[in-house]
Length: 398
Image 1 (cartoon, one colour):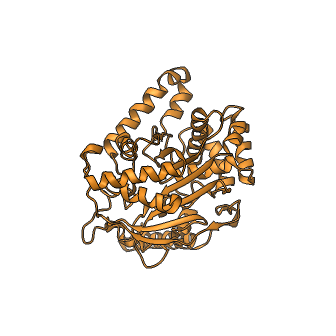
Image 2 (cartoon, rainbow, N blue to C red; image 1 turned 180 degrees about the vertical axis):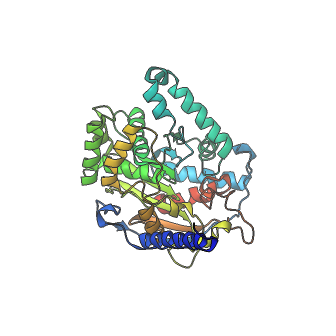
Image 3 (tube, one colour; image 1 turned 45 degrees about the vertical axis):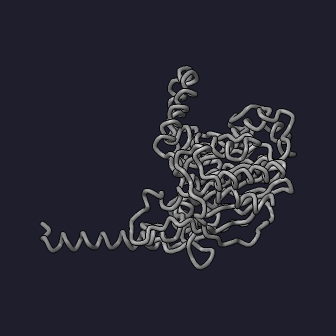
């Protein structure tokens, strides 16, 4: 029978062995074939710009245009005039992960078990789940209906503004669904092809939805591979490739807010990209992760949402599709890939221009990581709406 000393020695030796194995596993880079794929287009990168949010005009939290200060209203109306003069015809707002119409991916198993019942209730369930998300999140990392309506009202009602709801599931297939839904929605609004410029503003993983959308609209190698997966798995209607080809003649201006660097963006002379990132630090790299409790480095979720950070899909069919997409888009679920990618601390991608902005949400000595969603929820707050819209005008349209 083992003595107490022997049991303790065995216990601590096991812990030490596990810790050493974990350390060596994390220190060893993942195999090359499991690393994220290279971009499918030559990099088109503009120098990053460091800015600081200026709280020079107060914002009334009522989200009513008439209740806003006169200076705020005047400047937002000027934004509307600038967008209108530049030929912007539509403004789309796309939410990120976990703030959509099916954040926890509950509809797919429901459809699988009770397809007829799900077909009747799907729209109602999505509507109720999105309404619940809007009540809980409000304007923290979420584009509420009040927020979008205020943008339309404040810019003089010259340009229709609307949200595109996608499931917001945290995996490849969920985002590919979002890109296909964007193609279908644009086709419904522009059956003869897009007119003027389309401004698309997306928070968090909406960047990946934009990336997939651009790949599907271009004749890139990745785009062709994605269409093959869509065709093989019968994920959309047969006329979708034709619709995408028609939409490819439109002009698109993409603005990402705290978008993690994952899928490669395709770029044509009809597309422009502007990336806003909540950042505090001396250079372009993210700050030390140990200061996350006070969000000293800015947006930590923008780092954590990298390759390997996906969650498991809820149905077998989705998991099969995600494994196919892993080969095209990089590993969705892989702890080692995730750790090594987070360690790069990259903020700036290789397409478009990135604005590294201090939004002033650092907690100092106060723990504020949860109210700010680790610095990821600031972009959609009403009080920074004017600042963000003026930046978009300055870097895209002025």
